[in-house]
Image (cartoon, rainbow, N blue to C red; front, side):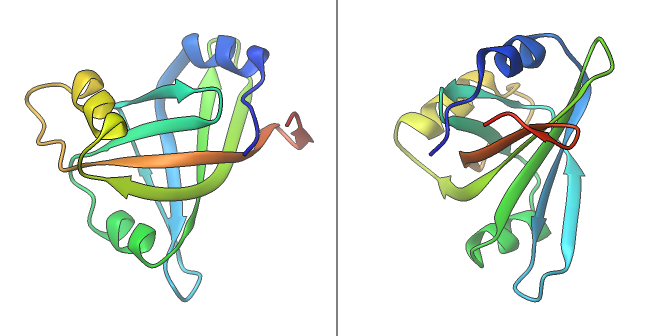
Length: 125
């Protein structure tokens, strides 16, 4: 796992809009969605609420890697890539339930284990 740099954590706290979360199916066909209920769990992990995943959940279960793209208020783009798994109980699931609005179902926590971090084409970690 790769730690998320402090500059990226600061940009995360200052992000605008909804991040884009991308996975791919077993044939390599990409799927990208906007996500709203997500946060940094620790230096190496991001948790996303699985509220209405369909293709995304199937891709995760098929062993997809993940990419998450977000913009800072300054207009700078960041991308976090890594392995992904789901949790339906335990600390990641509990964290997801805390950050997920009550109006959404929160079926599971999608957990990105950070492997690389970019700003534009520059690899930061």
